[in-house]
Image (cartoon, rainbow, N blue to C red; front, top):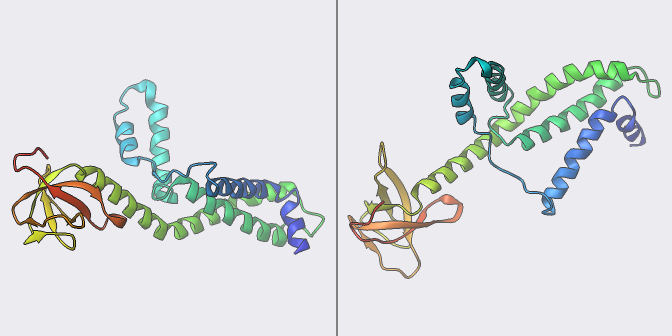
Length: 226
């Protein structure tokens, strides 16, 4: 244990240890509420459109930079998860791999070379980036599902549709909302104790249920605007 601490605090590992300390400090501040953790992903769709629209020659460097950023995001995986999550995994892997690489390929304890440790950062980053991408693949699917749920909620809240199930009550129901493109079909419930809404009647979406599995609705006037 003492040898591990000495290696981590040695000059050859001090850079990655510093980043690890900053990462731990960040998450501690998030846990105690001193910092907000932003779950939103970078809007790569809008960014790609912006890059394509940069036809002015004066914005050429910005266009190339934006395109490189988009490519890197897709290749390395930080377009699927929040950058702080991706960066935390990357720092954690780089710290562990740095200890191993320096222990195996950078002299002996007490006689490590800072120059060699800096050279080892390149293969370290490559390997850590690959491992980070692999680890964040399932995490990315979770965040994608959360983003889809948020988008759907923004789309349907306050909208009026027609009940397409036999009825909608506090245990089951389906509502069809006519939007541009294909109609949107969602699972709905009435508030506890409310009267069931019959098939074909209009209903308004008033709030999202637990985990976005369904939405609460109330009776709406047939001529209410969606």
